[in-house]
Length: 191
Image (cartoon, rainbow, N blue to C red; front, side, top):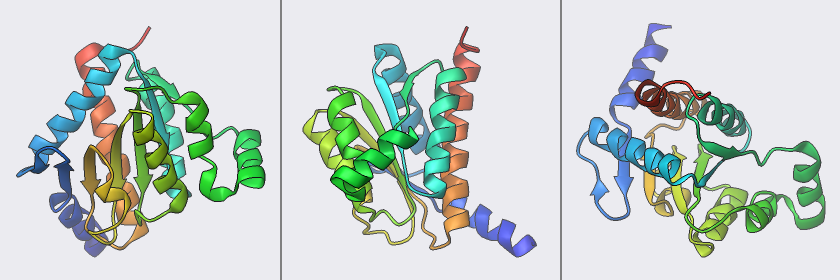
């Protein structure tokens, strides 16, 4: 039990946050402030915010869609309506379930938060490509291999250097929860 918690704490300590413009932030706090600033910027500009992921990362995406709306006061949009996801998967292929929706819903300057433990899921990669083509900003949350595809694609990138799904997903969830809690503390609850 203690070994798992130690592993979790060690991986939080070694989590890397980087920017396409700046490179790797030297401390977690600097990276977290950059993430927080980006979310606040999108809140102030009233742009739309989309979270996406598969499996456990989808559960994080759905949870954060509601938390960033209710507690963060942001304009979040869900990509998880079951009839839409199954329609896109059936008619366009699973690799397009998010990119096809984003092609219709995403506007220039919106924000896409892509969560993928492996960082190599084709449907996540395709969604990021669509977001970039439309002029949206992208924040990625990945783990496993440091050279994963998704980590190379974001404007801001959070990377957990671990190959265990539970650890990676827990840290992704923790960081996103910290961000929305900071926004809630600064701005108060949405009315």
